[in-house]
Amino acid sequence: MPVPVPAVITCIDCGGPATLLTEEPEDGWHLGDRLVYRCRDCLDRWDLIIEPDDLLP
Image (cartoon, rainbow, N blue to C red):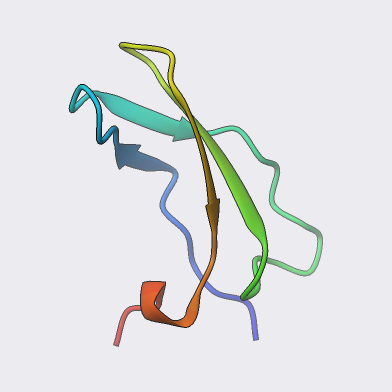
């Protein structure tokens, strides 16, 4: 079952907005997929894996 992911997260380093760079797969996001974000302020890159704990209740 596809899961929702945020288009923007907060950068852990500077607190700026980090936007999703990875294009959504045709069948949606699933557990184990890699998400790549880039912070607009400090340009740090964040690679995150969708895990069960990330799902909202």
